[in-house]
Length: 146
Image (cartoon, rainbow, N blue to C red; front, side, top):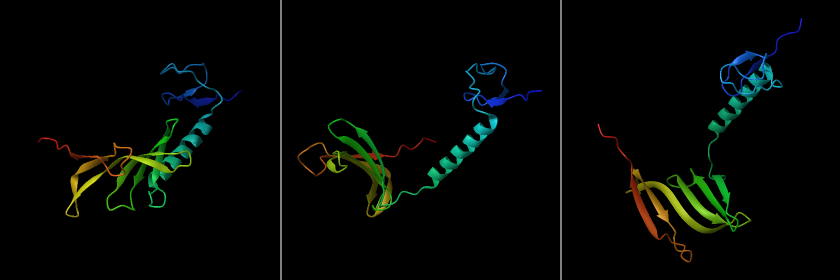
């Protein structure tokens, strides 16, 4: 007697006996090449990887960075957590070598008299010829009404 093959629907997560090509719950296509054991093993590996990512701390030597290729340059967004008095997000343009060529914006928590406030400030560098910011916006935290 042949042993029934159990699989997990990758769409809805239902554990089913492989008797048709579609899940009886969500009607999605079932791929018979992924066994229940393989699925559970992969799910556990993904959980461990997610937990490892959550536990990573940003450091001053390697800020978290994302880039968007614009063709003429890359738009880079970096998060600085520990080497600044207050954490900040810096947006700039970078050349092909990863060197910052133009500041675009800085977003950080507002600090007054060395005390952090429940507000943000956004510094915008709109003049490509000036390395100083040209506009400063204050954004107060929205407080829910009681």
